[in-house]
Image 1 (cartoon, rainbow, N blue to C red):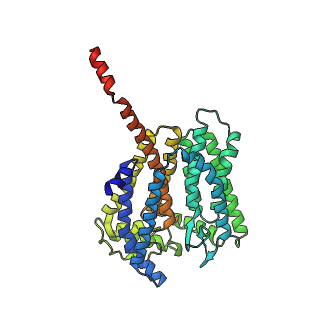
Image 2 (cartoon, rainbow, N blue to C red):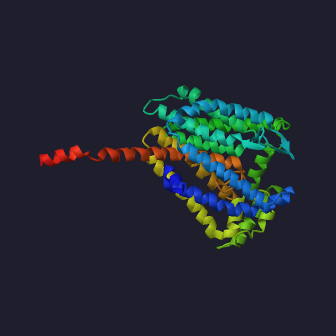
Image 3 (tube, rainbow, N blue to C red):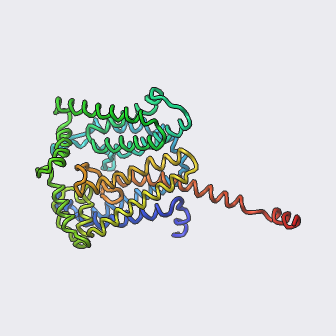
Length: 402
């Protein structure tokens, strides 16, 4: 049974191993930080959160396994089919959004009958990057003008960004930066990228002005963004700095080797100790060594992503791997940077480590796509080896000639 499963696993084995290591390690900090969630909710148990995290990871790796079995060329057409679906989901999310304790909660959409919520922006990010990879491979070796790229490229991009922005600025910014990075790597003219970057800044400024003029439309969101940025740059302590100050205390308490697994003190004070600020808890419990080892794993994953991209057999495959792979590493670096106050608070989770179903599932979806590209490469190599093996008649013929 075990050998059968291993034999059915295709693609880059190191990517499988790194993903598994991250997932296995995640149980320790999530279980430790779950005590804070129990205290806040007033019911349940830490073991219940442990089981919930296990189920999220189990479903995530099931997605990864299923997706990596799909020939990656199919994702080209699927991106076209999924883009309208993404638009509908994002619109439903905006319309369904509610205000919970004064905070805008329109990032999630409720899934009927299963009592679960789903963050549609994470799905939109993956689909959009696949769509951009498809577009770039389509125009490869063609002279493209800015006017020709507006309808097939920029309108879908800005529609997605516009629907996500009102509730989630950090995700919008990450998607835009990653989209521009992929376009740059795909050979899209730099002058056009600069022009669209400036257009994006102007659009953001206009959105902020409108939101300030009509504050009832989006309670607290723009004010929260501005407050976080101001707090980051002015260096003064305020109510908005509570989480980051606790995170710094956790990191300072960890020292070189940490206080020990499950012995974190700051997990009881950090509201997002199991998700947004889980890296601070990891450093507190496992020290600088643990925090650095985790960073090495993400850098190793980045290295393998680049290797898979370089070995892909098509331009679409190369861009697809970079498009869905680089955002994983970028998000991880931002999460770590926030914990050590190198970046303003963003609300981004640590991929495959933080609790939360949507983040885990979409990360596994992206890794599954990468593994699909890698599996195709393995298939081509195996076919070449089979072709290179001489048949008995060929061996006999060569012997007679000699």
